Every structure is written in structure tokens, then in C-alpha cells.
Length: 387
Ligand SMILES: NC(=O)c1ccc[n+]([C@@H]2O[C@H](COP(=O)([O-])OP(=O)(O)OC[C@H]3O[C@@H](n4cnc5c(N)ncnc54)[C@H](O)[C@@H]3O)[C@@H](O)[C@H]2O)c1
Image 1 (cartoon, rainbow, N blue to C red):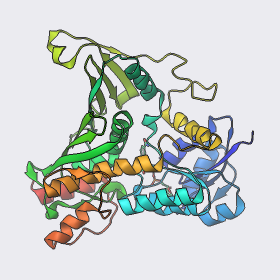
Image 2: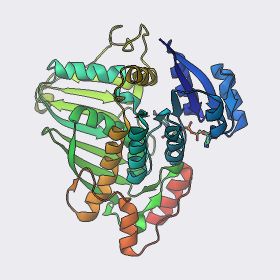
Image 3: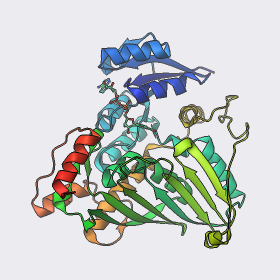
Image 4: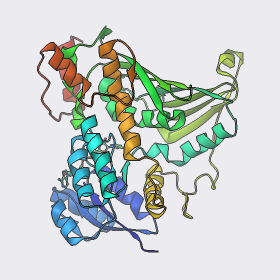
């Protein structure tokens, strides 16, 4: 069987991580790298042992025959770079979040379909070994019937945190809960409801956001419900961040810190009765990457192999563009719900950014796109909100 030919477009820290994951797979050739920054390009080339290096995307496509391009680049570059890849009839693995707004996400999903290409979004936790173990335990009845999913972000800051880690957490929730019917949310800053004057450009090129605290309730079509909270912590806490699966007979807790899974074998109402929890360990078989002999705990490796398997089996990737677009709707739906004071049905009917609409309705200028650091963003937020 011919090897899958992969290129990496963007050679920052994530480009190196994608490259290292692809390189572990036997039936993959990482044939080329591309970055407009020559220092990063050559450093990644040396680190990954890839000789064919390009400063220009179009030149790379002219010279290389590719099956997949990884797009590990800043969030605002996801749309133009992934679109360029798809235009060449090549499948793309783009970093999270899929795009900054739903119109861009719609275009990518449609383009992938029209070109007969796969579009995957790097919500790697949803395909990794820990989540497969959680799914297996759930299916085996370890926590009884699933009732509720509780998600918590790392502490980046309200709306910014939703686009940063919330996207991973919500993808996990969607993965366990299934189709989302509606969202109801409250978005606040310093304890008061946000208004148009609170809309800001997130750091890291993550687009329009608002609020230092987002609390949302999701109704999944199968009757399960989910909640998520994103608020500011002075120190980021991946120990508390993750998803709890709460069932009639117990609870499974996945934590981003250490990618750990914990099992409580008592109904949650009985925790005061001395219920204990145990860390779930994964056997060698649990850690075997599907379709290979490789043993790996690295969800990035599982994500890459899932792309190979999806291409070979002519099916969608588990973390496909449409799923990631739903995750973006789960985030933007919070603002839609907050603005109307009620439920926002998914998929959202209006594909424009709800915070842009909030500003326009109030006659407040929409903040112009800019890329800032986390510290610059927080300083501006605190100066504005009087913290
Ligand atoms: N999945 C995860 O667990 C995870 C973790 C952290 C970050 N991320 C995501 O990774 C992304 C950021 O990755 P990063 O920190 O490595 O980004 P980065 O900005 O440091 O690197 C991106 C690289 O892309 C290059 N680039 C930009 N435009 C280009 C073009 N037209 N042609 C060629 N090269 C181009 C830049 O020069 C840069 O070197 C974000 O989307 C973030 O959300 C994901």
C-alpha cells in the first residue's frame, strides 16, 4: 500500500508537534515543510529530518504530490490556509478552533465536500486513548446511564477561554452527548451582564470575544445535558479543567492535566457517604493506536493515524470539519443566547458573528481585528472593566 504523503504548513511549536506525530507512523511520509519564516522552517526541517522546504505554499503545491497538509498555524490563519489546501484538492488537518466565525467554517466544510477531500480539526483528545477508554467504560455500564456532562476550562478568561480550551472541552462533550439541540448561556464581566462595550478582540488572533465568565447549558437531543464554565484564574489550572461524565451509578472524570481519567463508583448524590475514586490505568492494548502495532499515549499520534485510517477507508475523520463547526456553534451560541435572554437553537440560523451583531445593534464600533498577547489583552480588559 502506498504511503500517505504529508506536508506541514506552519513550523511553530504545533508544527513541530504535528510533524513528530506524523513521523511515528509507518505508512506516512512527511515529504515537505512550508513556513514563511526561514529560521523556523529550517529548524523544523533539521529536527524532523525533512529536506524539502518551502517559503511559499503555492510553490510547494507546484513541486509536491500531496495527500494531506497539516495546518498548525495561528487561529486567524486557519481559514485562508486550509482553504488554499482544499482548493488544491488536498485533505487538510487544521488546528483548533476551526475558524473565527461560522461563515468561514461553512466555506471550509463545503469546499472539502465539493473537492472530495477530508477536513479534520485538531481536537485530538476526542480520538485519544483516554477517551476511547472512557467510552468503553461508559458502554460497559461503569457509571450507569449517562445523565450529565460537566466541562470546565483552564482559566484563561471567559470568552477567550471558550475559544482557547473550551473548544477541546466542548468537542469532548459533543462526542459523548451527541447532537446538540440548543444552548442557554449567561456571559458576564465583573458580575454584570455583558453589553456591546464589552466586545473585544481576543489574544492569539482568536477573534471577537466577550466576558470574563461564560456559563452555558447545552441540551443534547438524546436527553443528556451538559454545562460548561469558563472564567479567569490567576494561574492556569489544567488539574481542574476537563469533562465529568455523570451517570446514575457513578462518575468518570477526565482532566486535561496529565490526560488523566478517574472513576467514582457511587451515584454522585452519595459522595458524602464516603465514595472513593480510582485512577483508571490503560493496558497496553488500550494504548495501541488503531490499525497499527504502535503503542502510544500521545493523542496527536492517534489523531494522525485516524486521518490515515479515514483516507484508506474513504470515510470522515472522527474530528471532522462539520463536528468542529458544531463546536464553534456551541461557543458562539452562548452570545446568541445571552443577547436574546433565551435558548439559541443549533445550528444557528444567522451565520454572522453574534458579537458583531451585538455591536451593530448598539451602534458601537466592532473592534478591529488584531493579534495581541494574553498579557496585553488582560491589561486592556482590566483597564476597561475597572478591575
Ligand atoms: N491542539 C492542541 O492541543 C493545541 C495546543 C496549542 C495550540 N494549538 C493551536 O495551534 C495553533 C498555534 O500554533 P503555533 O503556536 O505553533 O503557531 P505559530 O503562530 O507559532 O506558528 C505558525 C507558523 O505558521 C507560519 N505561517 C503563517 N502563515 C503562513 C503562510 N502563508 N505560509 C507558510 N507559513 C505560514 C508562521 O510563520 C509560523 O511559523 C493555534 O491554532 C492554537 O489554537 C493547539
